Image (tube, rainbow, N blue to C red; front, side, top):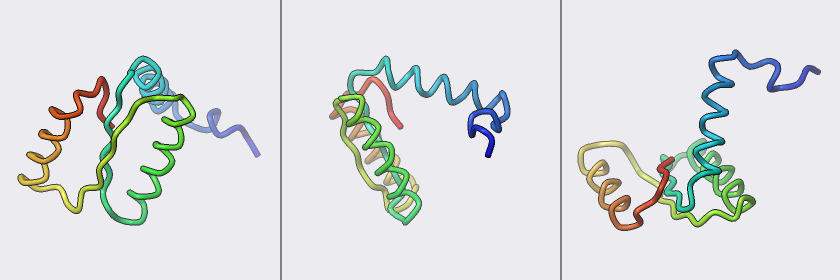
Length: 86
């Protein structure tokens, strides 16, 4: 089986590198996720990675994206004042 990174298109690798760099530079990170099976799973993976990197973080599950939840997200970001929002 070939290396997973070798199988990715270069444009995706560039985005992956940028995401890793942004995460490594950030001290405080806020993560948002949709509250369904794939969203919760993705958030668990992200939080595990943030714990591994010993980052300060907060997270919130969102039931659905609408004008009300956008305001909630904005308020959470203003409260926590993260360097990076995922």
